[in-house]
Length: 508
Image (cartoon, rainbow, N blue to C red; front, side, top):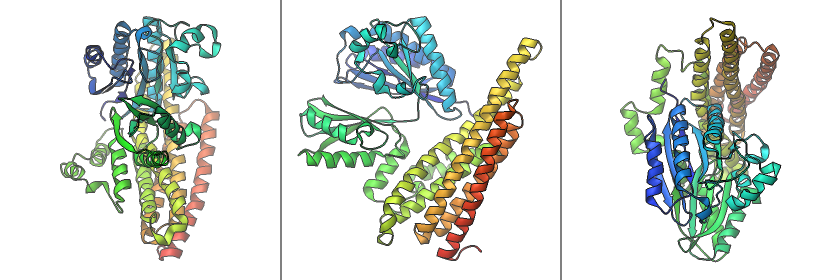
């Protein structure tokens, strides 16, 4: 397997002095095994976003070097910009990529936070998946009052005390560090300079105001134009195209139009494919219709081919757990496909709304299961690493036993989560088989078969890993969960078989 890889996207409160941003980017790129992918500067926001990737230890070191350099170069007492901020290095999110899990990124965020606080004296707050309190999951809660408001509150309000570091702000302010899934930073400019219109639209579309799920939005004035500034935190569930359409409708009602849009930093390829499919009304559409994808496939460079080749190697990972997750991801993809083959057909107008919901759910499950392919391998690698720890002394034996127990627990949690998601995919496969496009009945059945295989394979991995746990109560609780999933899957299989037989005459 290739080395674990994480993405880091720190935001810095400087977008006007190129030399300062270049200096910070240099601190990142000078870290061994770390690669800077993108540098985005915005003068009106007075903010820069640098995207880089590397192995976990390299990414953590690069982030620390950047935070240290930013603290030397940026004074928040003299900073002004449109974007909310509390620190010179305002926010540092870690995102798991290949071979890394969300738990890995959480550990990375907390370790870095401790180091930044102890070595640099900068207060650190943890957010998103790394948050220590529910109210700190959302970044906007931590930025309340911005640098100026936090400066007084941090010393007197226990609720504003940092997770690490002193209860006071210096010129570098505070830094928010966390772990999250990929998001898209996306801004839409309007044909007006009336910032109140942008604020009204932002309020209408953001989730916290009752708008679209997984959308965070602010209205502001940038380059003389009203701008709706957004973070899309779950683009498979709420796509760029859906957000753009909602903004267009809201703008029209307020007598303006969309002038243009921009991306801040990088965007996952699938997000653009989904946007193209939405706007062009491509039905059907398959990713192998993209020229570059077909070329990579022909050259043997496709991710699927690489995974199958790795599976065939004589190495412990990837193994059955990863294969289970891959099967589940394919099952979810088939469910989404059947949903898309149903939407827009007059014959199925009465189920169109539900099919759109199913597509969103299936896409979310597909992404989660694809992440689990690597997570399962990473978890087992941690078990192997724990087994290799020294055991010559009593202290070493105790440390080794603790590390092995924690690693085995993780190696059980991943396939159990996969099994739970497989059950969800199987239920969705039943539903599209019962009410979706009858011409895709075999695809619905195939989705169900793959989901069932996923659950079975994942269950075997749960059983073998749980058998090695010292905590037998936890192991037994997990086995009970697995038994319930198996019972539900059996019922769903019967339902699926009946649906494809009744509607398409398939099966027996």
